[in-house]
Image 1 (tube, rainbow, N blue to C red):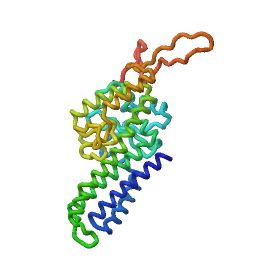
Image 2: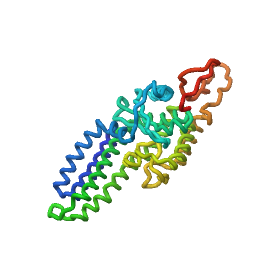
Image 3: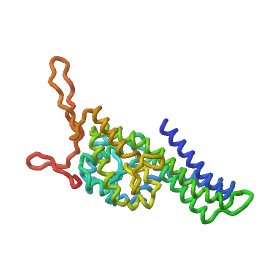
Amino acid sequence: MLNFLRTSVLLAVLTAIFMAVGYFVGGTGGMWIAFIIAALTNLFAYWNSDKMVLRMQNAVEVDPRTQPDLHNTVAALAQRAGIPMPKLYVINTEQPNAFATGRNPQNAAVAVSAGLLRYLEPREVAAVVAHELAHIRSRDTLTMTMTATIAGAISMLAQFGLFFGGGNSRDNPLGPIGVLIAVIVAPIAAALVQMAVSRTREYEADKDGAEISDDPLALASALNKISQLAQRTVNVPAERNPAQAHMYIFNPLNGQRMDNLFSTHPNVENRIAQLQRIAGEMQVDRTGRRPAPQPATGDNIPRNTGGGWRVPSTGSSENGNSSRGPWG
């Protein structure tokens, strides 16, 4: 219920921004046309925004045959999270990053970049996937995906008004000045809504993902690597569609690292510090293990907590050691 209310409020705010742009471009008539367009956009976004986002990010679906280790890892983590196995996609970019999308856990997808599989260790990949599964389990993906779609539409409408709107009339007294206001203010307002959506949910997904993977320091290590490599690698699909940047686990746009009002993501150092605190509370070390239980007598026998998350293996060698996958 809370997620439904939150989604409804966000969509109402974005629709209001959409209508304001329509008013400044075409007066009262433009406002109602924008309202109709916004309603249709909301309806389309609910059913199709995930497919559109995946296509715009050049994501290619993979299966157990093409990515067996990744598939096994996601399947095991999805079971731990208590959600259905999502569809898997790989984004054709060397920038290590990932995002989740879908209107509910039954229609969800996780997309990881080729760079993530190339540069991160298996434990780190698993921790990133757990973070994305946390978004799916909490149904953040619907809100984040629809917000990306509508925010992009607001920017397009504002740009459209710059070239075709702004005639002086009693219905639109501000004329070209109103169009200029819409072009400048509307995309900023939509971006602020995206930032408010993304930043609070990243902290929550970090926390929930650490619980799913049982390995918070692996996620901390992954975020550290991603933050360093992402600044040196251009994510072309994300740069072409900046309205979708807030969906990624780390801002895919170059140079966006500050934890301020205009950042779509929390500061990575703050996120790592939170994960380190969680690891201390869980008593998990850097290898993902907990301290071995102390011997006990009588009925006071502690449960075995020396496990921790392990990446599933797709096979084993002749001496019994599990083999590492192609992205390990």
